[in-house]
Each structure stands twice: as C-alpha cells, then as structure tokens.
Length: 329
Ligand code: ATP
Image 1 (tube, rainbow, N blue to C red):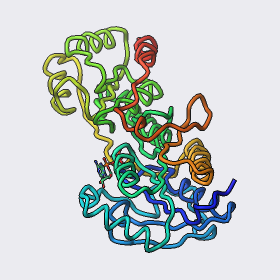
Image 2 (image 1 turned 180 degrees about the horizontal axis):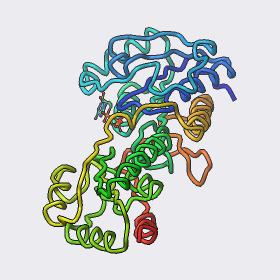
Image 3 (image 1 turned 180 degrees about the vertical axis):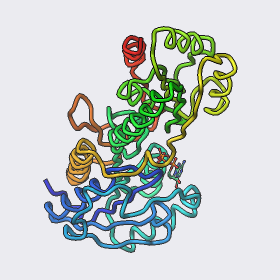
C-alpha cells in the first residue's frame, strides 16, 4: 500500500474551526505512523504554511484530543496565501521540511487554496471537509455539522422552556450565511414552527399567516429558526419587530446563538466521521492518488475530485422543508 514517494505528510486546519477537527488530526497522525510515514503539523492554516510554523507529530502527541472542540493546530484565514508570492513561500517551506503531500481540513475556500498550490508546484493534496455549515459537495456530512446541530437543539430546547412559560414567540438565529442546513435540520429536531433559510424565500405574508394559524391552533409558544443568510431581506431583529407590529397578539423575543455553535466536544458521529475520512485521506495519498476530497456518500467513504467539491454549495434536501411543514401543524 505504501507509495515509494510519500514519506512525509503535512496537515493543517483552515477556515472556520469545527468540532471534530482534532479527531481528524489524531487519526491522520496515527494512520501515518501505522503506515510508517512521518507526519508534520502546520499551525494556523495556510498562514503557518507561509511562515514555516511546523512541528513534527507522533501518535502520543495527539493523546486525549478526540474529545476536544476547536483545533490544536489553530486555524486562520490567510490573505498572504492568496498571492503567488505567498504560495511560493509556502512551497519553499514544504520543500525545506521535505513534506511530500498535504492534507487540508477545512471548507471550500481552503480546498481552492490547496488546489491552486497543487497545480502551481505539483504537490499532492487531499481535502477533508471540516465545517459546521455542511455546505460542501461530495459529502452528506461535514465534520462538525452533527455537533453543531446538537448544540443548537440543546439551546432551542432551553429557549422553548422560557418561551412556553411566557407564551412568547422566539426568533432564534443560527449560523448559515449561504446554506440553510443547520437551520433546517435543527429546526425539525427542535420542533420549530417555521424555518427561514437562504435557499427558499417563504415570503413575509406566508410567515405571518403561518404564525397566525399557529396561535389559533392553541400553541402556547412558537420558535422560528432563522439562518443568518435567510432571504426575506431583514435581519433577525427587524423580522421580530415586523412580526410584533403585524401580529400584536404575539410577544416577540430574539436570540442569536452565535459562536457557541462552533464549540463543544464533538458528537460521537463527528468523531467517527473524522476518523474514517482521515484514514482514507492518508491511504489515498499513499496509493499515489491526489487532489481529492474524502466524503461520506450513502454512508460509504468516497473520493470526489477537489475541483468538483468546490463547485458551489451542496443543495438542501427540499423534502425536509415538507416534513417540517407537516409536523409543525
Ligand atoms: P469555512 O467554510 O469555515 O469558511 P473555508 O475553508 O471556506 O472555511 P475561507 O476563509 O473561504 O474558509 O478560506 C480559508 C483560506 O483558504 C483563506 O484564508 C485563504 O488563505 C485560502 N483561500 C481561499 N480561497 C483562496 C484562493 N482563491 N486562492 C488561494 N487561497 C485561497
């Protein structure tokens, strides 16, 4: 299985952090050891690559991290790496450290950067989808998504307690500037009355109508889950005000969950996913393949060429919207 050319693999985390990134780092380091390949950690994403912020990692350096949120390698967004000069420095650092291949854990922006580096300097790269947004093509789940969903439903359950005690309507904003996966899935999981996502414009009239119906049907509280990038053209506070003005029977409150959605111990699902994808990423490189993203398709770990993985966002499952409509009656 071991290729003759890959003797040392570099790993970095890039873009937004996501729970489960540490589980992926751990699995990469240990898979390298298993196959007698060296592993080097690169700190602060592509910025650390440009600055040569490297450290060798062995299997005992990644003890007790499978359960930790965030990323021990730190993450960053690097403007320098977007320049040809920055990427040349990055390549020189890889050469100096005799790194033969690179694994990038991150989102589509990170994969784009990795692909450009690979094309310019013929460095084999692999992508592992790590982002809470679940917006990457070529995988049903990204690392961190499941944990974020659990964090959101936990928070919404708590908000529901106070909402029903006071008979209030809560607008709860969750992450998702371009993708509604978190709002849609957590909305169903937490029993939200309405879910507003970037992919679908429900329209203000329908929202008001639905909330009116909800009240008439005897519900004592209502939760509307709002993705950051929803398409009604109002932020969550403006939405709350608008509804309060038009439906005075409701006492409206707004809650923005914010960065808590990125944190916390990864769920078992994310730990297992990160481990499976990481073993495959290392072994794919050792088989002499390059420039793929590893992902989960029909619960099997599959490869998708990186250039396809970065083409737009993964579509939402419209059936979930229908399910939500039916069960929130
Ligand atoms: P998330 O989905 O969590 O935001 P991401 O990987 O999409 O993660 P980005 O901020 O888009 O996050 O990208 C991370 C880094 O990847 C950037 O800071 C930059 O260093 C690198 N990168 C992104 N696009 C390019 C590009 N076109 N050329 C070179 N590097 C890029």
